Amino acid sequence: MRLLRGCAVIVSLVVSASAVMRAQSISVGVQTARGVHTVAFETPQGMVRVYVSSDAAPGDRISGAILVEPAGVSPEDRAANLGQLDSFVMDWEGQQSPVSSRGYVWLIPIALRAGAGALSLHDSGGRLLAQAIVPIDPVPAPDQRTPSPGDTFELPTEA
Image (cartoon, rainbow, N blue to C red; front, side, top):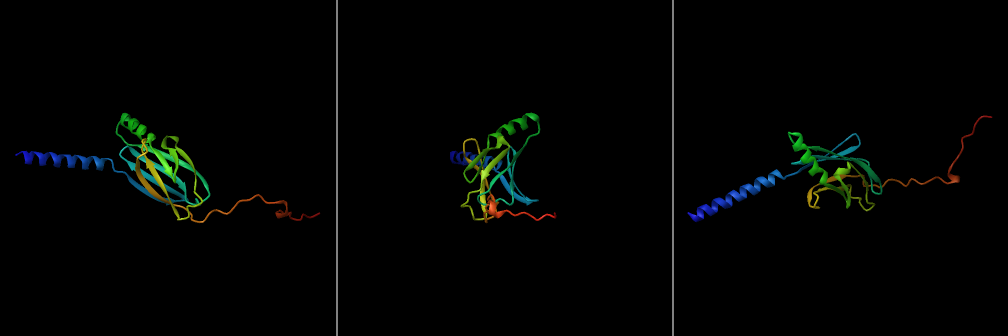
């Protein structure tokens, strides 16, 4: 009888842990349209979306928006979920931006020529919640140097 009761307790703990793990799961998707990669992290607290230029290349400084949509039926639920979403941190190749900032400014590392970079979502304690692979242009942008006086020319005009 004790063995049966012990097994029942273990089974209920496993089922409970499994339900908690499912409740904490986060889905991630990357879509590209009109020159923008949209990275969506769907969490139990709601959605976090990060917008990244699709022509970003190594050496570029990029900036963009971080938008949140809290889940919940009541205003209280949405407010509580918004508080949790705002405590999250986005990480692009070691550069962090709080979700609460609603934006980011990151540098695409010059050494990142693999054609993709990792965008991660962390909780307030620094624990990795989810990660997405975002495509980048593997070829660095050409140098935009200031022309020297010898590089300029003038068009002739009629007198």
